[in-house]
Image (cartoon, rainbow, N blue to C red; front, side, top):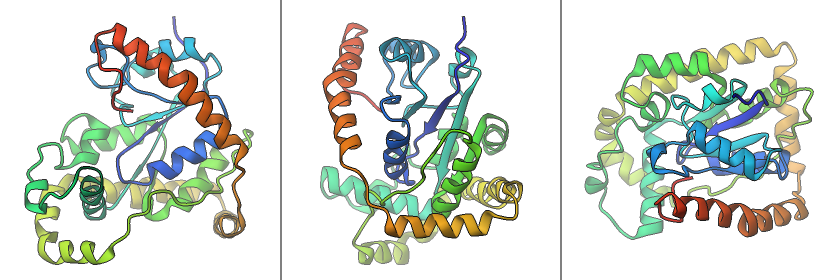
Length: 279
């Protein structure tokens, strides 16, 4: 049995604008979006078709799923052929430094040399897309499995195109940036001392990022048509004037904390996993 519902699936790569996009998605898919996580040991840390089946039992109206555990190489597409993957890539050097700053903010000081030895760090974006450090496979997946691929450095362009591609669904791409890193002096110091080492660790990510920017996103802009520049300017102006409603986020927060989180935590515990897990 398969599920033919159109479901947007956001592959959330850390420190690439994902938190801001999640708030946009929650607002637009009000009470029909889900911050997902693996629910069984068989998932092996990746959101699976079995996990999606469980999520649709919890809320049959789901139109959008998002999280760090969503992968385009998983078996979810077999269960839901109309799953529409989206993701945002980021300049690998900036993303690496931003992740280091987040690590220090959450867990305390760690020197950058030690941070660079983490085995999950090299070419992280390529591995998120392909499941391995296989650049050609990652390109193929972005080309064939993704509904839309953007880059953080052109976030407004990504949102403008996404709104068009989701028509006739009324998608409002207005937003306020979330979790913007500060302390640029730290970034400048790291760049001065470690830029070459960061580049060495992210050779595949650099090529994947350039492919997303110069091929995939460029193609989407062309397909959009002659009004793209004007619509992009309108989107940017709307962001300056936009003031978010507090009602929807408050209701969404209550539903997630009072219903989704307890139910999914219980399912994880019953399947022998810790109550909390990677979203």
